Length: 335
Image (cartoon, rainbow, N blue to C red; front, side, top):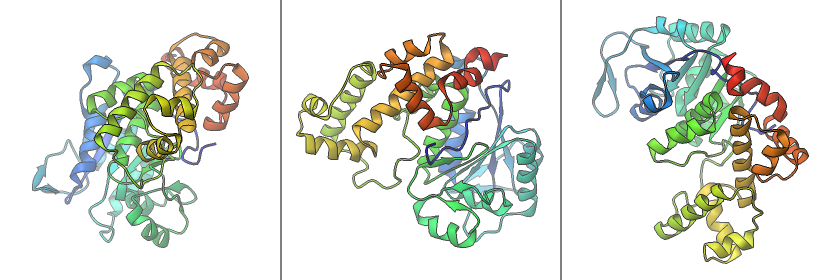
């Protein structure tokens, strides 16, 4: 099972899942905006099954956000009682106490099966509830040691973008919150929908949660970015074909050594691992949305044989392709 994924859960079995994002005085504007952009933005191109969205106030009175913004919410913490997913968009300060009323509301929500998601320093809110004790969690690399020291019962995972524990999900720095929220969309609605959301955001559709938080060169130079971007487009349309480091390096006009270094700087992983992840995502998409046999899916995703697909699928997701289809296919979720 991958380090950043504990179990498969989704909200697709719920008609129009209710997402509630917390707002508070001293709100972290960017993290709040991530939740609004991904879960709260109307998406008519995706039909009428998209998430419902609301903002719940933690504090009474005027709420101020970073940048001089004032926030008006949809209601108070009572909104959490009907939430299917609660998003904690950072927290106003590591030394700012988490209100008892908020901790109690989050515990009650979790007890009835609501999923909880934190972005960046929002993990300290979840930690204060005790719900992360015995679980894996992550946060921004600057806060890792503080989280370990204050909450020794949490298994703090360093150097990942996000951690999925099933009903509790945590992300690293602010931008990693986008990756985690897209991960939730992919889990709930499938790869095609997640890719559609990513296209509107003009960002890559998928970064593996186990990818390191800090890359030595997180942004490639323009020319390299263009060449690698064209390579990614090519690979997405030729996943079934065999690819070697030599053939990929020649396609972008680099030596093998330079290509490997620059590919990892841009993606945080190796070409082989990147291809495996993309093939597994394509296989999940077929399992969710088609009636193709496992043999056909293996052929159309570059695994060749069903046994190879089964091996990698179970290794990555701790579930077989057949079991995954039973749980997450469109026909299953409709039932």
